[in-house]
Image (cartoon, rainbow, N blue to C red; front, side, top):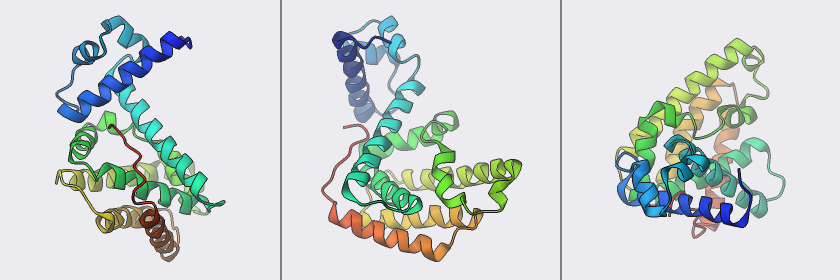
Length: 217
């Protein structure tokens, strides 16, 4: 892909236009033609950078998690990988659930299984919790556990997002606790240690409550 200044500006324009439309109208009601019109580009230009909406979503969520990851790294000192992930995921959900429009968009992504599968790398998510699990050493069993964790994670997220309401810090903490208690049990991770991570992550979030890292706008 073009790395020229004009090419990067075109790509950034497409991303900004898509984010704006997704924020206002949600995922389902935005077509590629609408994105082209908003960005003032031809369909061929859009598909050169992003062949389909899934590619845009993948970029948005990967970039979103990357920015959160960098913020946690810059704000802490050499956290244990599992603890660092909990800090990130608390910030991840808090920034999604602070805006009703983003909650609606997130719900529509969750409803589409193929789109949900692009949200994050499941193996990277599980790795810190599965490191000492004897079950995870068996490749076939590890795949089954990942599928089980993924299904539970999606259903809990979807049930939460369907409320279409914002959540405060306490409610976000409760959601993360429910999801990761299942993860810990599946991969034989110390649940009490998990709860310590969540409590410390909650305190971290309180200290950075005004740090807004947007998924869309």
